Length: 177
Image (cartoon, one colour):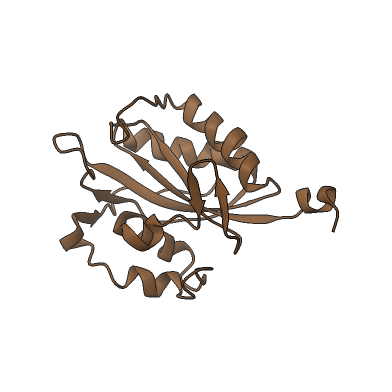
C-alpha cells in the first residue's frame, strides 16, 4: 500500500475529553468542532471527577468520543485537536495539572501502537484512570486493547466510579453532530 493510499484510509480515533472551566459549554462545543475532522460516531455520558494532582480546583467533566476520520493520528492531533483546543481557549502552561477549558487526547487509534510526540497510543491512562476507561467502555465495550488483549469493558470493570471520585452527570447529554 502506498503512502497516499494509507492517508486516504478511514480511521477510528477514540478520544478522551475533559474540562473544568465552563465545562457545560466547552464539552458540547468540542464535540461539535471535532465533527469538522470526520464523523462523530458515538459519544459517552458525561462523568464528573475530582482533579488528579491538583487539589483545590473545580471538578472535571469527562467524556469519550469515537471519531471516524480520514486523518492520520498525527494530523488529527496537530491540526484537528490543536485547532479545537485553541478555538475553545486552551492555554498550556508549565503546570500540567492546571485548570483547562478543554483537554482532548487520542487514547486509541484503530488498533495501532504508535508514538505521537510525548504520548504513547494506546495511552497508558486507558489502563490507569477511571475517568478515561469508563467513558471509553461506554462507546466501544468490545474494542480489544492492542497491548493487553482485554476489552474496554473488562478494563473499565476494574474501576468503581464512586470510590474513584466519579459520578455520572445524567443531567448533561452530549450529542454526536
